Image 1 (tube, rainbow, N blue to C red):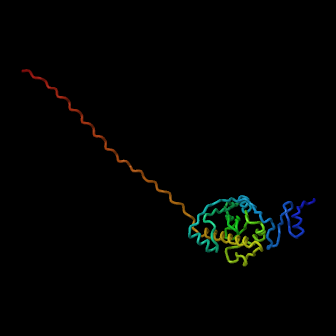
Image 2 (image 1 turned 90 degrees about the vertical axis):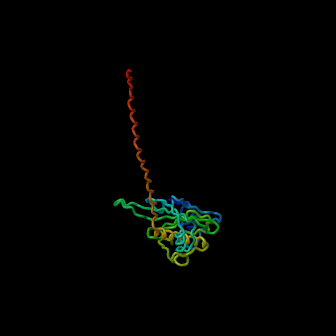
Image 3 (image 1 turned 180 degrees about the vertical axis):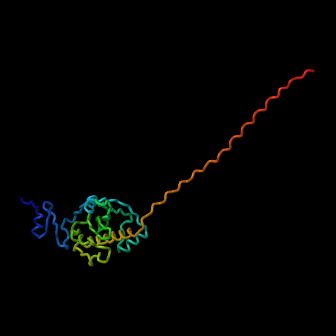
Length: 243
């Protein structure tokens, strides 16, 4: 069967890179090579639902809402070494039931973060496993020019990383020439999410407020029985006497 290749795909193959037939996209490139796209083009790859399906296939996913207090926010920023972008979180926790035992097993948590790269924003999905390790990072939207978006090998090196000193550019992470600001923003986002996940795991679960006790209704005092009306005295009949 004759394969149908676009000009862009042929160019990829001639350059020694892989390509996806019919798409014009190269699928592999050296880590230091940024994407070559028009400077004005932005990038959108996945919707939120598609990203969750990719991260947690055949899982039950529950969306939560968490409001960080001042102490939690300070703890996160101290551990991450980067400022938070919001104090309101919506973690998506995934679980799966064992078909044999019926036990529910926690699979992981996905966090979505939108932050500024240079002048415009990007949105990332960062997935953390139950042991506090990174699973994957996906780019959902990138508003900067696409030439500043690193290729997949850059994001793949975050897998299995924990919140330690190796999760830094120039140490455990390699940067991409021409994409320094994007690499830095991704590093900070990964550290923030891992710090958030750790602080939330160490925080006690909020206890529900006790239900208010019912206010007893006052028992009405019994009304005294009305006194019976006195019976009228029989009228005296005066019998006239004769004279």
